[in-house]
Image (cartoon, rainbow, N blue to C red):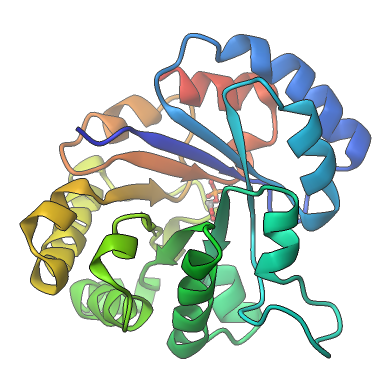
Length: 248
Ligand SMILES: O=C(CO)COP(=O)(O)O
């Protein structure tokens, strides 16, 4: 049985006072949930959020990390620093990082391996552009991203990775893949994991959908057989709407 996981990606939003207000309202609304709930805020909020969510069901993740433990990498944050704050998860390879910060499949693979080595669970993002979808290359693109990200990752650690399938054309656009289409690609990703690690790992690994998930479409998405959760951007910024999503 895979435990569903719904994660907030706050991207470059929220101040300390906004985050405190959010948690104050949000924590009481999700007490009854069996879903694993993760909030991934900007680095500046990790410490505060870790403190104020202590004793709640909320886990905290970062949105990015460097793969090295320390060194002359101005502006970067290392896995040691994240672990120092007891951070549970880290989003890796989000399409915005691939697109605006030139993250390649090789970099994503280094970050995935480094996160796992430091006991941080990666939320690994993959997904195709609109042009790639129109050219019917979705499976090819997603498979290449998955194979590259999992390169040299041991079986036992592989199952700790959460994969987020986020079609780029559905992010922040209000367009969503239909639940059936999203499920089809996610089932294909699961098949790819099976080819790599066998059926037991592929049945255990959790795969989320991301891209304009809202309170009004989350239930249809979560009801699909292969979809184990959601990675939510815009609709995770308000406690009320993110709580509705978690309580789908
Ligand atoms: O990129 C996303 C989550 O990582 C999705 O963002 P939206 O939910 O705003 O489309």
